[in-house]
Length: 478
Image 1 (cartoon, rainbow, N blue to C red):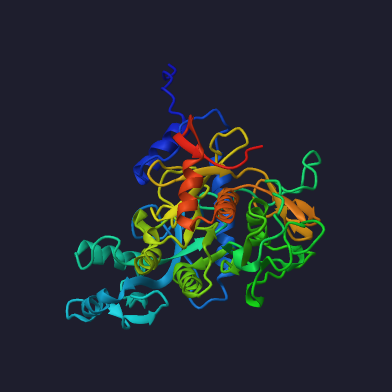
Image 2 (cartoon, rainbow, N blue to C red):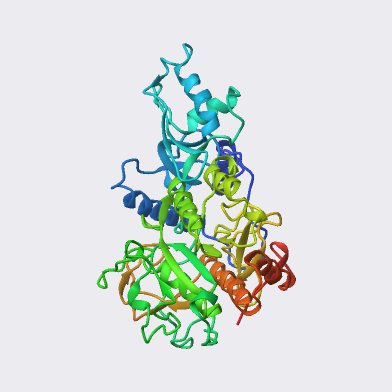
């Protein structure tokens, strides 16, 4: 006699059940907004590739790169599960906490559990120390397991000591850009978007608003080129150490990102003086300890930038505020200063989880909308921390001439040829649009940086997005 048929159990349901049991984290998938849903397998592959780019770029450094999980103290074995990146064996601590941590590691109870001493390097940010942590004898992760232990034993408050996070412009699912650079579509034509605003032509050097673009550096061939005349010689520049060198036969990953971003600023603020800082030079990434030191160096300059545009950031361990940026603000008190404002990208993983430094209340955080005014499907969002939105989809601006071979799925191996311009998408590009708007307002009115930022945001167009809720949008859309 035949055995009766057993009820089926769909493999997809089983897979989802196992995933929930193994990873019981909050579901941050945004509600349906009528746009195509992401392909998880494709996104996982994409993240593996992009993390791989950063790992390779840091191979020539002393420390390298580790990947952090969404939760816990064990680094993921699959880069698709990486939530953030950090410097192995190091942490950022306050100078005032150093002695207490040193005593902890050398106490009779703990001295046999660790190998080596707690080392310290001062930084340019007063009170911030880059610490070399002792190695753990139990072979657990020297950073994640140790910080978790310090918090569990109440040696420190949660988040008081942080990994030396890696800030980057690379990972979709964690940052910008949301796409690889694309060749121009024929219907777009060889003109920039946003369109280049005409210059007044009578602005003295002293009157020009000073904007710093903290990015991958400047491809100097774009300056004064017939392809990008809005990048005028003398008004956009970089120190020799901040110039980006590109092989035209094999344009490297994230090449031209800083040049493109600077071009967006100049289109919106044609009389601004834009200096491109080559900070994100390792696969579009840098250690947090290094970027905050370079920011402090720029701020200490007598002729410091009035606007700092950062198309980069990171998620963090436990979503805690990154200590390096926190200490940078503690020393400079940005919210109380009228003479400088920081504008930063909200990131590209369609999440409401805080993305730093954009999530700080002293930063103007910028999300992306499409030409229809709806929040871009890649853009991060958050009622409590994203201040304003601007178009970040399909910008057109300066890009190195040469051949680029795609490395991200689904376009792996595709050859793209560029002749000085490209089309690109991400909150990387909505950010300089807002920076440019602020600079243009300052140029026209003489208002301070802080006042101009407030006026630009308050003058935006309020609307309700089906995915995010109430938002404020500034700048051109079409």
